[in-house]
Amino acid sequence: MRYRNEYRWSEITPKSAFLNRRQIIAATAALIASPALAAGGTYSTDEAPNSLEDITSYNNYYEFGYGKSDPAAYAGGLKTDPWSIVIDGLVDKPGTYDLADVLKGQTIEERIYRFRCVEAWSMVIPWNGFELSALLNRVGVQPAAKYVAFETLLRPEEMPGQKLAGIEWPYREGLRMDEAMNPLTLLATGIYGEPMPNQNGAPIRLVVPWKYGFKSIKSIVRISLTETMPQTTWNMLQPNEYGFYANVNPEVDHPRWSQASERPIGGGLFAGRKETIKFNGYGEQVASLYAGQDLAKDY
Image (tube, rainbow, N blue to C red):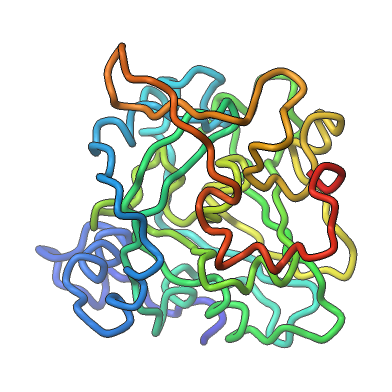
């Protein structure tokens, strides 16, 4: 892995093939056919994915506004090329990495995960990405590191929601180290084999399928490894409602709504709610992470 790419993609790729870095990511996701891809599929749900229109038109991305249609309406002006990510804290190789360096050598897989969001609505999305653990292993996790903190881009001139009151920007999220290293946890670069749309978190975002959508931070520009639990945006904003862990738990109600059921998006006006499954159905893979914890308190 190199610190900063010394060449631009336009200098080494024919103009007919070059538009931006995300197209190269998409091509990798669409064309790859390897044992790693097949293995990744074992984590996927067997539910039918939502349509691309559903996935790209109904979003929570408060940097572009608080309405579900605001991201699709206002995210088009976000510039995602060039893009770099600061990786710092308790790592062996801290630095500012060009996105091409972050992706170098990664195998892009497709995994179909149910994505459940804050207000208990859900979609089934075919994500293209790679395991977060692969990146963390490459930069070297130091023994003292217990948590991974993430930050979103802060660019109010392109993200009009950041001019609104109510949230302390930039948006922040965090995982415990064992959560971050779990093979389910992805850094996603696309959906449906295409580049990640701006409204869905281009060019790179986190997907943690057993947790709420608000754990899945978008447009990541910083990854920091820490010894202490990092601040997270929703916990900072409303600590009585949103804890650090944010596991999908139908046994623990949110103060303002039940978590026992969810509303699938895309089923039409008369589609019913469905029963919420603890850990979003991934209990076999992740329940052991929380052995001995009271998940009513560690919510």
